[in-house]
Amino acid sequence: MDVDGASQPLYASAQELIQPSALQPLQLGIDPEHHCIVCKGCQCAVQRHALYNHILCSHGSVSRLPSNINTILDEHQVPQHISSPQSKVIPMASIPIIPGFMCTMPDCGAAGQFYTSFSHNHSRLAHPGILAKDCITPSLIQVVFPAKNDYQAWPVDPNYATLSTPVDYAPALDKMKHHDAQGWDDGRVHTPRDPRHVNGFLKEFGWLQITEGKNYKELCSLVEAPSRNNAALLPFKDKLEEYFSRIRPIVDGMAPLILRWINTAEGQV
Ligand SMILES: [Zn+2]
Ligand SMILES: [Zn+2]
Image (tube, rainbow, N blue to C red; front, top):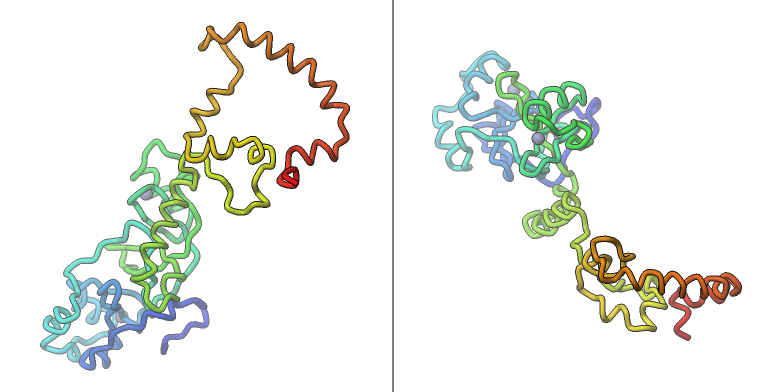
């Protein structure tokens, strides 16, 4: 990579730019993943419709812009306008990856470099009523389009770029992202795969087989103490309390080791 990385240490390593020979004198490349025009000199992407102006304003002369530029861009499927992604993406080559912030609201994916301005400008306008602390989280970002009138910072995941065939792994990573966003709790009881995590009592008395795959909230409601909501059970409450008040001194008197044995996987011996 021929850009100066001294001030910005981290770059995507796996995704190399496509470099059509006609664009090399201008130090322009095309990102193979996002089909963006990337100006290596400026370390940013340039929207297709803004390319002429970018060369003119930032690099002084458009004389080196090839006459068949549109054909070249068409060949590499560069769209007229590129919009921000709605979640983390593979970083673009030749653009620094820097710490920043992103919005975690579903299908939003907005990102910014500075917490104060991002939370002020984004969460207040895009998600009124939701506190910034509930939707903004630190993330690595790339300032892909730095122009004020079309500013785009993208949330990126460098792990995507280190994969040799990102398309094969992307669905699995997307699934993990989805789980991270939604939580791993699917509302059902699952027996731990690792026997060291299995509760000996639940295993020995068959509860694990009975509860496997069941909705645990419904199960909890079955064993909660009777209240006014299930008045028919209230007569049992006194009986149960009486029962527990009788066995409590027995349990209290047991050696801690016995109690541990009853309540752990080792209890199965
Ligand atoms: Zn440039
Ligand atoms: Zn948002």
